[in-house]
Image (cartoon, rainbow, N blue to C red; front, side):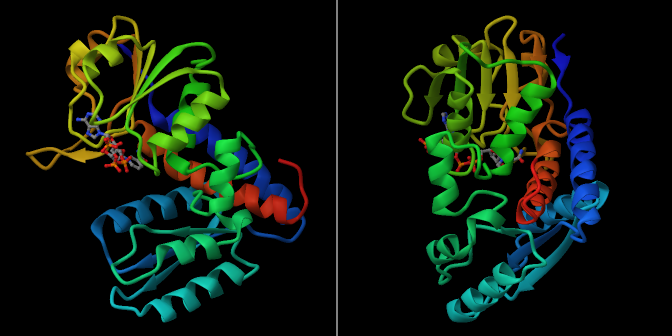
Length: 286
Ligand code: NAP
């Protein structure tokens, strides 16, 4: 059976780092604070919000939710968002996307100050990510994957890594982080021919497709490390990943579970980015 790469110890180690940063910022009179901007009440947003608030609280980072009505006009939304971004007490700003129809997401992306953009939605932080410049914030989920691998001593350098998924939220940014650490990378998607063969070549397989249990044992080479980013609800209503956990556990050497894997690390990365943003605003080193 594969060794479980659980998210909880990774999240705990990140929280410890956050606590140290918060101690240094508080000594300088600044309490790190995350502003969460939500428009409407999408269940996905509410679930992520609960996790983010809990994680911030446990890490000693303050958090405030700015909930705006689903029917808000674009002008009112842009004004409210600009005010949250401009408040010097908010060190990190998280905006739930996609925004309801009629709201200009591109304008919001452009408006967020890169130094407060703790989940990488601004063009400036995206550019840094693609340039391999670590001074910007990467999106939290791809960073959570890298933190998980690092925590468990899995180096990607020179390894054959196959990534299933090329979205702007997970796949592409994760590809950049993997390349920055010198992985030999294959990125797959719905047009990939013989996906199973591409996956079987991998020493490290990362699934970020959003398709319940699509990665079966036949996709995994014996001894591979498998990271499951997927968060899906199956036909019985249960949360599951993109990986058929039972079957793949018998083939892989190490595997992240769902729930309890990468997802549980993501919100601690958000707290970390917020603490780092606060420290940077004070000119403190990381
Ligand atoms: P997305 O925007 O739907 O993108 C899915 C990607 O996977 C696309 O590039 C798509 O290819 C590819 N894909 C889908 N089905 C495939 C298949 N059968 N074969 C090969 N490629 C396939 O999803 P996302 O936002 O990137 O999210 C991916 C998963 O991660 C979801 O389950 C989501 O819930 C989860 N997630 C988890 C966290 C966390 O904290 N753990 C955070 C965010 C997202 P094309 O480009 O060709 O369409």
